[in-house]
Image (tube, rainbow, N blue to C red; front, side, top):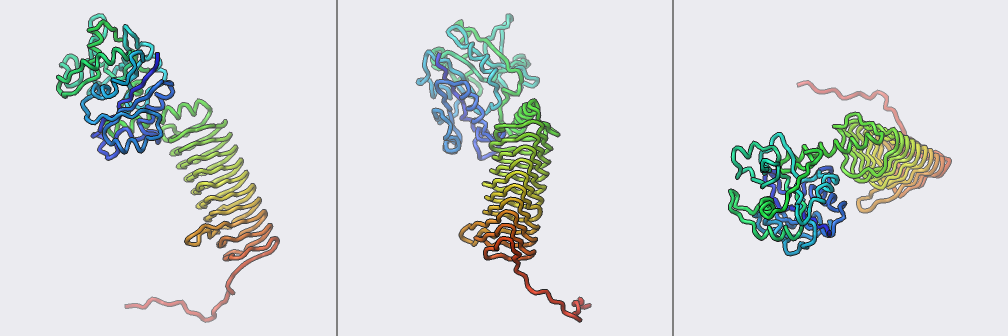
Amino acid sequence: MPLEIVILAAGQGTRMRSSLPKILHKIGNKSLLEHVYALANRLRPDKITVIYGHGGETVLKSLEHLEVTWVEQREQLGTGHAVMQVADAIGEESTVLILYGDVPLLNDATVKKLLPLAGEDQIGLLTVNLGDPYGYGRIVRDPQGRVLRIVEEKDASAEERETREVNTGILAINGRHLKKWLGRLENNNAQREYYLTDVIAMAVADDVRVETVQPSDPNEVLGVNNRAQLAHLERVFQSGLAEELMRTGVSLRDPSRFDVRGQIDAVGRDVEIDVNVVLEGRIKLGDNVRIGANCVIRDCEIGNNVEILPNCVIEDAVIGEGSRIGPFARIRPETRIDDHVHVGNFVEVKKSAISSGSKVNHLSYIGDTIIGRDVNVGAGTITCNYDGANKHQTVIEDGAFIGSDTQLVAPVRVGKNATIGAGATITKDAPENALTLSRAKQITVEGWQRPVKKRS
């Protein structure tokens, strides 16, 4: 049967207390709706429809890259009313899977158990047993254990509220049945809304069995209604990623203080990661990589045997084998660092290439620069790449030695094996195999008296 997936994502999310629509809040740097879409897409459906409402323009602009059919629910009159918006477009021979845009951690395996339950003589419903079922619709069963109906919290009796089995809202159903029962929905309830859950009682009345499955972990079906729930699911999500990494052989000093906000494309053997490390974007880690505490690494490829010391920020860079970065280094976008390079404390590198064996160890800024092999850059060196309007390039050739507190005013070239004296300001090309310096003559003033503070 064709598979159609309908994602309900029109809720306002007032308890989030945010101007941002609820489904755009993020877990692992991906919006709630993007998590649900990723699951839906992995199921290879014939069609994905997202029903949106509050913050419509913002939602469409933020998620225009999703390959879905967008349908607006102008009035929020309940989940049943939301699905009514697409009733005419649903194929009668299709299996329809109902998902929710604020339930981000649903597992593929759980959904694959649910889908086969949809048919001519039965529907599939995902339920879960909760210790505290407050706010959820309760599953009402007969003495033989067959599902009879779902009763919402506000409409439930005291006895029904004692039930721990609750409705997740996630449903697999034949398209013909769904269209028929949507046409019968009424809003004679405490909320004056059209509840999609009412189709359960309609199915029972029409002798269509309601078969249930449950997730292996209740966190899979938890929704986000406030910031505390968002934070809880963030930790659940990160815990799962940490477990997966550790199974591949990565050592995490404290899995509860580690975040992935993107995708790790490759990871080598014997990787060690200290606390409070954040990996963002697309990441590749080679063998024996060691990452110190409090580092943020984004869109990077890190080679074998690289050591990144604490408190570094590295973005859109390639770090070659055997290199050492930090502590307190900042590597900015479009930087390529070759093998066995040292970039030390309080060094910033931007849009530069540093070749094998070179060192920039202390308190330096290297921008728009090409550094050759076996170059030593002294403490406090600055490549002055910006003239107030345009950026210019500095080239430092193999074997050069740059003395401390040097300013290289680009565009400028330092030749092979050249030496630049400490404190120099270099505005012209420095020839190879020679010492170049610019320094005022040192003088001593005899008999000079240091000023003394006057007493009142």
